[in-house]
Image 1 (cartoon, each protein chain N blue to C red):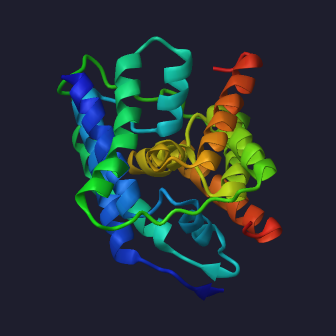
Image 2 (image 1 turned 90 degrees about the vertical axis):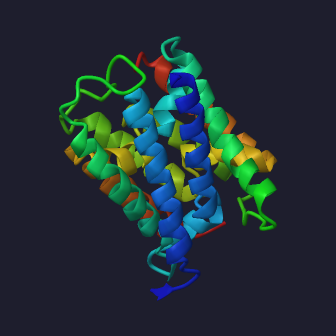
Length: 139
Length: 136
């Protein structure tokens, strides 16, 4: 293993900002900022629909504000393999719904709440994701 | 007021994903490429987010209601069941295939990339297929 492209300062700074978002949503609205649940609830439930919708709109507006307020570009690269995209999307949708949480809900909110369920979930999805990359490589 | 809080929370979250570059699947795959060329940044994102939020979860644990809503909406399930294990494992495989999880996938709509949109549609398909087997 070699360490490359490590950006600890921007990673930690961005992380504290995400933490602030989690705090505002929790102490303001009593909600956990778990994006898979917010998205799934928006699609399937009338309860809290306005809040879910506005949170996700904000999630898209955030990067746009960043683009307009700096001269920096946002580094972005995604595979153009449709089979990978479709398989990945389906598995992320099924997996996060069945496990009731994703990187934000389990990985951040759940661990911050010391939830054993979330700690187990996070360890598992990290392991299977790392093994997946180890087996198929980065496309 | 709760609507404004929701919008502001989403915006802050989206800015955090952008500044940490977690919005970028290639950056996330760099973290998951643990056995080859490893980029540990994602761990620092999680540590930053957890360090900021954990004290507030602790301080508010006995409060009866949040500032602008009637109740705290916190999951009641505590058991480590097979659904948690199978679901998390499947999610990890999908995450490793593309480097996208739900938050960055939605935030990246700001960057207007057709493959990110295909991913989101597939993810919605995954939610839908799961609900077909009467899962909620």
